[in-house]
Image 1 (cartoon, rainbow, N blue to C red):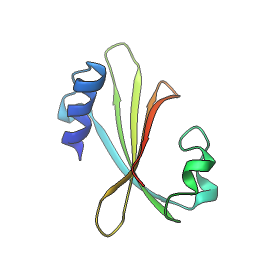
Image 2: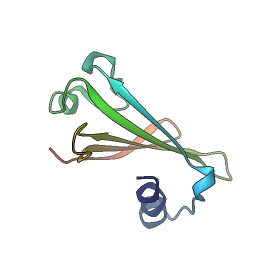
Image 3: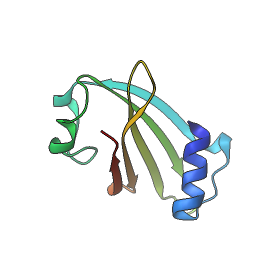
Image 4: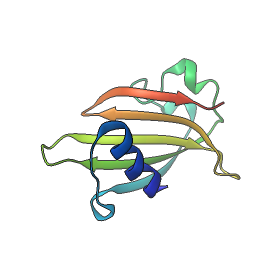
Length: 97
C-alpha cells in the first residue's frame, strides 16, 4: 500500500515522495474514538466497528505534512474509505462502501 500512497501523491498532488521518507502506521479504532476531522460521523456510521485505519505520512521540503488515512476490511484488505489531510485540514475523501 505504500506504493499506492507514493503513486497517488505524484498523480493527484504533483508531490514526489521517496519510499524511505514516507511513514506508515496501522490502528484499530472504535467509532467513538474517531475525530470528525479525520472521518465525519455520517461517514463513520457506514464503516465497520471497530475499524482498521492505515495511515500514510509524509512531510515535504516546505514542512507541509501530508496524511492519507485508509480504512480497510480486516479480512480482505479491501479499501472501504480514504481520507487525505494536508497540514491538519481534510482536502479530500472517497467512500467505497
